[in-house]
Length: 337
Image 1: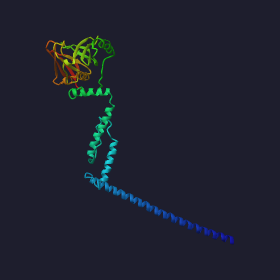
Image 2: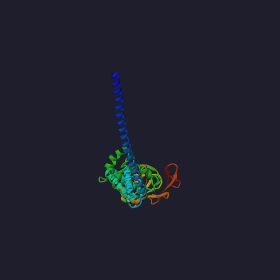
Image 3: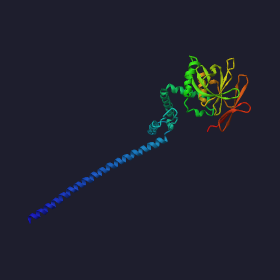
Image 4: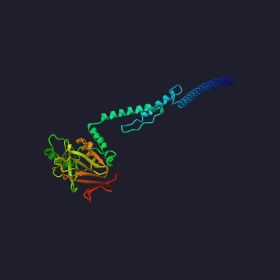
C-alpha cells in the first residue's frame, strides 16, 4: 500500500518536473525564434533600403547623365563606363577588315572614337608584322590592279579573290622555257618575272594564234607555243600605251612606238588572266600610267603599213572574238551575273 503510493507520488513529480523542463525549453525556442526573425527582418529592411537607395541613385544619374559629372550622377556614369568597356572587350573587331564597333553611350562618344583608332592601329601593327614577303608582294600587286581597274572594268570584282601567280605555264611549256628560252633567247643579265599563255591576233586579218608571253625585267617576249621562237620582242621603253575595254573580255592592246625598231605594229592579245597580266606589265615595266581602260566601245591599233585597225566591243549572251564584215575585230562580251 505504502509502496504503491510512493510510486504514484514519484510519477506525479517526474511528470511535473519534465513538464517544467519542456516549458522552459519551449520558451527558449520561441524567444530565439523571435530574435532570429527580428534579425532577418532587419536585414531584409536594410537590403530593401539599399536597393531603394541604389535605384534612386540610378534614376537621378540617368536623368542627369548628360550633365557634367557631379555627386548625383557619378555613380550612374561610372557604372555606364564600366559596363560599356566590359561589353566592348567581348566584341572587339577580329581583323583589320572588320569595321564593326559597339555603339557607345553619348558620354563615351569621344572615348570610343579614340579607342577605335587605337584598336585599328594595334591590329594593323600586328598584321603588318605577320605579313610575309610573298604576301606583301601579292598585296602590292592587288593595290596596283585596284588603281588600274576598280570601277572601270566589269570583270575586276571577280579577280579580287584570285591570287596572282608568277607563272601560269603548263609543265611542258616550263620545260621548253628552261631548255630554250633561258638558254638561247634571253640575255644573261635578264630576269624572268612572269610567264603565261596568250592568244595573239594578227594585225591583218585578225587570225588567232597561240603564243607564250614572257615578261623579263627588260623586255616583253611573245614566243611561238610550239618551238619558243621569238615572234615579238618589245623593250618596255617602246611601249606607249596598254589599252583594254571596260567590259568582261580578256582582250588588250599593247601600243608600240613605231620608230625604225623592227616593230611590226601594236600587239593584240587575249588572256584568261588579263587583269593579272596587265598588272604585271604595268609593275615590271613601270608603265602603270600608260594603262587605259576604254569605255567608248572601240579601240584603234596601228599596223606596220601605217594604217589603223579597229576593235569593236559589244555586249551579248556569249563570249566570242571574230572578224567583222567590215574588216574590224568584233568582240562580244557577256554581262556579269
